[in-house]
Image (cartoon, rainbow, N blue to C red; front, side, top):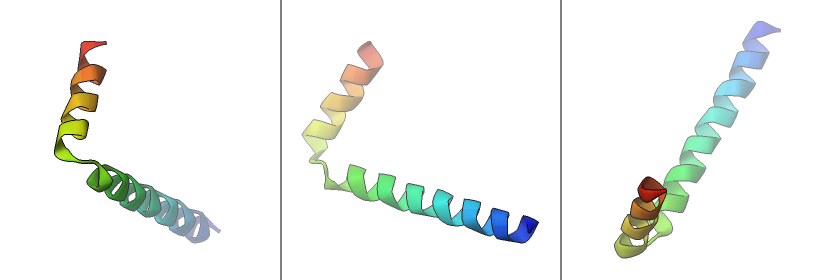
Length: 42
């Protein structure tokens, strides 16, 4: 049971990392920097 839960957790975590990296890779450099700057200045 514990192995199943850990496997599912790992799969969800890996999927989240891949989704996040894919989403950030889609952004142009200027937009990514502007969004980061706007987040930091708040």
